[in-house]
Amino acid sequence: MRRNLTQGRRVKQITMLVALVFASFFSHASSHREAPLIANDPLADNTDLYAFRSPDDTNTITIIANYIPAEFAFGGPNYNTFGENIRYEIHINNGSSTTGDKFVYRFTFTTTNQDPTTFFNIRLGKQNQMATYVCEKSSDGGATFTTIVSAGVVPPPNIGPRSISSGVGLNTADYNSLITAAIATASGGGGEKVFAGPADDPFFVDLGGIFDLGDAPRQGGAVIRDALAKHNVHSICIKIPISSLQMSGKTTAQATSILDPNFVIGVWASASRLATKTLNTTGGGSVESGTWVQVSRLGMPLTNEAVIPIGKKDIWNSITPYQDLDSLAVFGPFFYNPELALYMDTEQYGGAVPAFAALRIQHKSLGAFDFGNGKSGLFGLIGNPGLVGTAFDPALPYQALLLPNATSPRSVDIWPIFNTGVPNLPPYQLATGKAGNPLAAGKPFINNFLPTGGDMLRLNMAVPVTPRNDPNFSSEGLLAAAVLGLTNTTYNGDATLQFIPNMDGFPNGRRLEDDVTRIELQAVGGVVLAAVGLWYDDYQPNGNHSPVTNQLLNVLNYSTGVEHNDTTFKAAFPYVQTPWSGANVVYQ
Image (cartoon, one colour):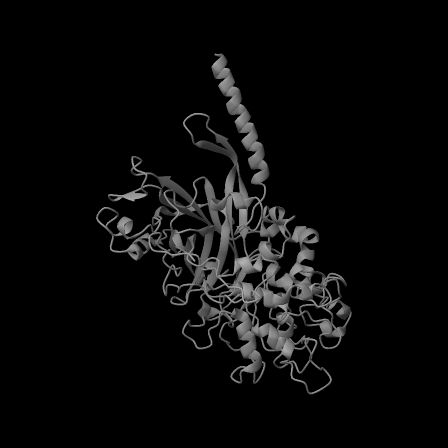
């Protein structure tokens, strides 16, 4: 009796302790090891999110949400896989409401050991850690769900040829045959294709240089290295017909233009866990219970990594994008005056970060506008009659968000890129056709405006696909489109709307090929402002000086030194490449 009471007290104490820890731990979230708390929970950790018009099936959109950062291919005997008791979700807002999601795709996974008598992961046709999943879909923002894949199969880890192809393993033709067999067609009439499984990590960046106080590109002849080369992740991939996502069920053939505002979607991904975990005192294992709590979320890449400071990362990730606007007083200043801008500013700490020497903040753009942290930016235009008809028009509800005060200079470019998308209104049109006035109408090149005020990856589905073999295809995404629209005679003859290659690139969605680290650093350096006619300081507004100045060229030519993935991408769904083999990969 005494033993049972003692054991009961121990269980109760452990339960209470774990409940307190998890209540604290899982009240916050993060992505790609970007916040302290989620770094201890890799199975629930969002690493990256992609949304793009499918290059080989242009009537569809592909969304890819990756989880579990920096997987070693040889990580046995217990290889990484999707976690049980985790809700992995992809959320989509299609403009029908700014108060919540329209669609939610929910994935839950189950793991089975088919042969618990061996320490091998795969042996004689049987798998341990064999993962399957159920995919549910909600079309009412998460109020109700319908199962669209009831027995999805997750391919095993790519352990090596003996485990995958030989007679003592799975005896399959090759690993790619497992990927093909794992692609499911959803029931319910939505027309989705679904894949969940290990893949090459498509993200590329020199993490070692970036986090060494901004040493990217590395100085002094140091070796530049893609830190994620030959690492794997776990990908959830969905290919969805555009007509299923468009608010009125229209196809792109019915769009009013290639920038039709009614074709904009916002996408974000999350992971949630049960609030309480109780460790068993005998027999091992645990029991999870309580309410579901979001522990990770991801929309725009690098938001939490490079914009939100460490003291706010966990808090920021504990809320949904629909709570961001209500938290504007807390998080808005990190976009209005981004920390990275301090290291690109000769009046601040630019001299201490030589790697960013090519990236310089405008202090006297057009001789009048100062975009240094704490400066006024475009706020001095308040009351100017030239704002009528622009995104800053006082008759529109956005002026207070885009021009909040005299000390938030980047509220006009960095904040809307992350939190509202960009409308097809002046000044957010290319300088082509503006005749030197950034508030005049220019050449349209983007419209992914979805004014939720929350961090999402926004995509205008009406924008055509740039073929991957187009000579103008560029990992610089929308920035490359801007350069073509300003400098190429095919596109800069007038301000007429026309498709420019890479208008379908980041930050209009995100393709697997897009170099988001480089683009976002260039954006902090003011390149978006320059594209719309707010030129760099060495431009002479009263002379015959070309706006293509040395400072602009420095920013355009800036590179971190890692500009592409370490391998190719598949030409067809799921597009992510085959995971690296643990038996064959060599890390340097």
